[in-house]
Image (cartoon, rainbow, N blue to C red; front, side):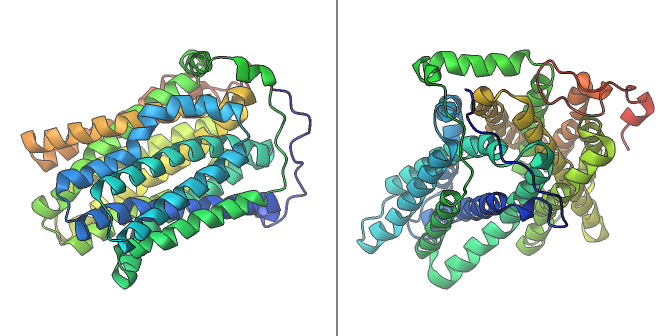
Length: 441
C-alpha cells in the first residue's frame, strides 16, 4: 500500500501536547466514550439477565463468554479485513452496529418480547463489533499521529481506557438503580453514537489502499500476519509475554473475590474498593508511560517497569484483615501500573514498527494470542482454588506474574535502550542490564 498523502505533520509543541491537535482530540473523545459504553455493557447485560430474566450463574457466564469468544472466532480474519478497508469507516460502522444492537433490547422489553437468546445474540454482536473496532483503532492511531506524538498519544488513550474501566461499572450500577437495567442500554447506545460522530469529524485522510491486496486470499493474508509475528525477534517474545501474563493475571483474578470474602473475611464494599486499586494503577501507569520512555528509553523502560512492578504481585496472597489490606491495595496498584506502561510502550512499538499494510493483521494476531490465554487462566485459577484453596491458588498465579518479565529479558530488548522503528533497522545497542537489576525488588 503506497500512501498518496503524507501523514499529518506535527505542530510546534506546547503545554497541551497531543491535545493541541484537533484530530487527536476527536479520536480521544470518541475512543473514551466508546470505551465507557463497552464498560457499561459488560455490567448491564449480565445485570439484565439476572434481574429481568432471572438467569442462573451458568447463563450469566455464557453472556460474558459471548463477549470474549469473537476474539477466538473472528480475530485473525478481522485483522486481514481491517488491512483491506478504510479504518475510520469500519470503526464508525462498528459503533452504529453496537448502538442498534443495544437499542433492540429496550424495544424488545417494551413489547414484552425480550428473551435470553436475544440477550446472548446482542452480547455476541457487540463482542464482534469490539473485535473489529479495536483492531482498526490500533491501526488508525498511526494515521492520526506521527512518530513524535505516537507514544504520548497512546499514553493518553490508555489512561482514558483505564479510567473508563473504573467509572464504567459504577456508572452502569447507578443508571440501573435510577432508571432500570434495561433502560441503561439506551444511554449505552448513545455513547456509541457519540463515538461515531467524533470519528466522522476527524479531518485526516487515509492512505490509498493497494488494489492488489484485495485479490490475495484471506487465508494467505492471515498467514502473512502470523509469520511476521512468529519470525520477528521483538514481536515474538512480546506476544509470549503477553499471553503468559494474561493467563496468570486472570488466574488469580478468578479466585481473588473468593479469597477476599471467604479467606480474608471482607464485605462486598471493601472488596470493590480493593479491586479498584488495579484500575487506578492503570491510570497512573498510562500517565507515567511517556515519561518512562523518555527517561529510560522505550526498550529499557519497558523492561525496568516490569522488573520494578511485577514482583509486587506477591503481596496479594499475603493479605490479611485490618492493616494487612494495604498489602493487596499496594500489590494491585503497582501491578496495574506495570501492565499499563507495557500496554502503551508495546502498542506504540507495534504501530511504528510494523509495515502499514500488515499492521491490522499483526495487531489482531497479538490480541488473539493474548485473549486466548484469558479463559485458560481463569479455568486454571478456578481449578487450583477448588483443589488447594484460594490462598495457595493466589500464590501460584501471582508467582507467575512476578517472574514472567524474564520472557522479555530473554529477548533482544535487554541490549537496547530504545526499540527500533522498523524491521531490520536495529536500535542503538547499549550495555546489557546488569545481573543485579534482574533480582526481584
